[in-house]
Length: 147
Image 1 (tube, rainbow, N blue to C red):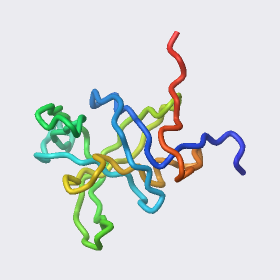
Image 2: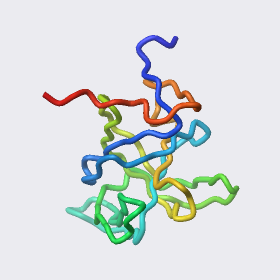
Image 3: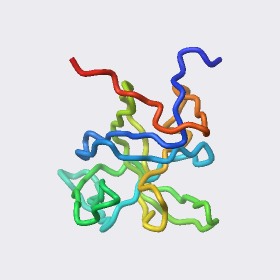
Image 4: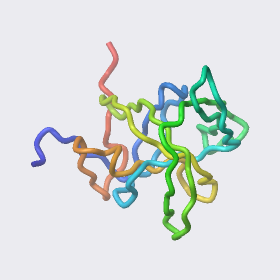
């Protein structure tokens, strides 16, 4: 069934409002189960008795001096196999995301993606049943005009 599904491209722009990030370019990857985000300085901490992580994000890949310090509760720790075949334990967080006019929560693994072109991979679980991907297109998800 394709009705009521938004078509998105292989590259899209998202916002992560809890992290104060807008217009982050992501690579849509239907081969990746879970979304992953490039972060630095990951540290496990406890906030009000809740196991959490603190980390740094560079929301603008063209300006590495721009650093956002973030914290989030840990929702899981998983062994993830990367595209090069190596496995690593990663912290998983759950956070709201905005793409176009849609807002929902997704799971994101935190890792070092410094050798990749995009700071974030947007995986199958995040796509869910709301989107169809047209790999020949980019930036199809349009925000609804604000009133």
